[in-house]
Image (cartoon, rainbow, N blue to C red):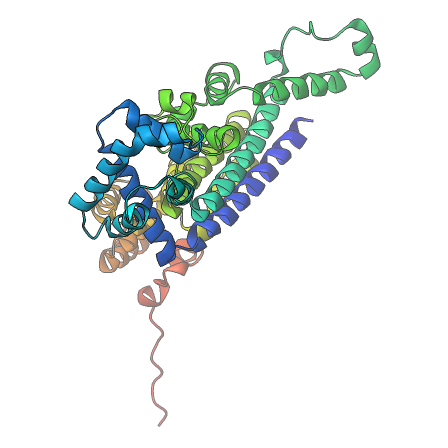
Length: 436
């Protein structure tokens, strides 16, 4: 049962990473047409113009009418006329390229004076540009909900794996009667049922409860706050998902109280493809490390576990080029294993992704320290090649070959050196003498 649980974990993290990778395509292809961009700027300009009107009961009534929260009867409109005039003045005073479209809309609304029969038009304009999310945001919201659901599915397998390997962490069994125990017939069946109930109960909790359980009660002592790239950003993803599901993407009280810099309650949360990409990277990093940490904890001496963790790191959303996620995963495996070969392999992958992110100086500094150490010659030569010191790599290998520290076979069998094509420089092909 324990081996099966580890296989389930490996499968779950692969499905999770493939899901995130697929959703990442949405972030890459979500259309950003000129019309959408203009609508976004218009909405921002109108919202800013309204916010610049001094707070007053009249402004509140106007906003209520614009949202459709209040019927636009004669009395309400009459009380909002002063505020409406101020809105027109503000739009004119702040005419610029940023609010040109907003001013045009205001001029159309207020042309010839604010007439009672124009209020439906006012409300339509405001609801179109301010009171609903852009189509782009609706697509991104759907992708975000799917991504968080994928994370929860992976979390369920992680919890099930931890409890299967450490059933003592289950409750004392008060949930089962003697009849239940007799019905299940075997201890394994009873444990599987207890694990299922505990997983279901935990998944009905929120992120803070999962964080506490993984850190204090799960056995692996996994701290989600340290696994995430940015704990505050990671938490915001779940708060936003809840707002999308429960309040159609509008800021609710929970979001406003827990997310720093939150807009006012009732404000629709807009999103961009870049936001979705960052959110997916947060989920991918924490989810993958959660699975890798569980795998390595329960199978620490196992070469199989190391290889599974390595494959997770190598496969996780590679097409999406999520460099930060890759860096964190390889670094985590490197710090958790005693195998020098695995540590070096993880270090190389980490360097490669950091170079892709532009951290050439940091990688060069670490590589030079490694080259000057007393580590394995071939690994030091590879480090030279990583930072472009090809001549020094060849000199290191030649010196070691002359001293008998390594053999030609060692060099030829090194996948790193073979991939970097260095053997032809160590042993250049012999020139054939011309025939007489």
